Image (cartoon, rainbow, N blue to C red):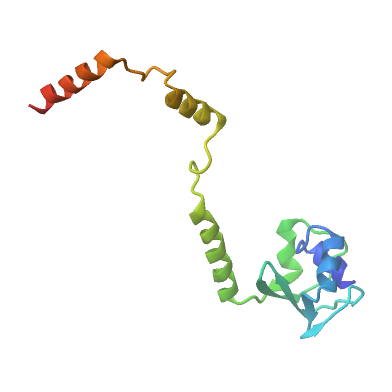
Length: 144
């Protein structure tokens, strides 16, 4: 089976054309040698793939007849990737989460309307001149 078709069948790439593009960019090697899309894959080959700045290594156990379901992939390939590569991937994902915690960030439309209402003074929180004196006198009473 061709290498581009194999990588698509074992769900390493979403489409066969993406697999072919990655091979053209010299990101796939078999046995340490960069290959072309037409290279035939055999059981026992070790494929090195550079994807998302991570170096993956997989060993071909058997050749599938067509694209596999995700649960069947481990029957056809064996993962030989270093554990350090997966740790690097985890670190990158955690760094991305650091910048934007869920619930923070840009305000929603509702938040923006409430902010505009508060700033313009149209909301319920608007005070008149006499109200301020009453507000501060209540604070002084509670402090005593």
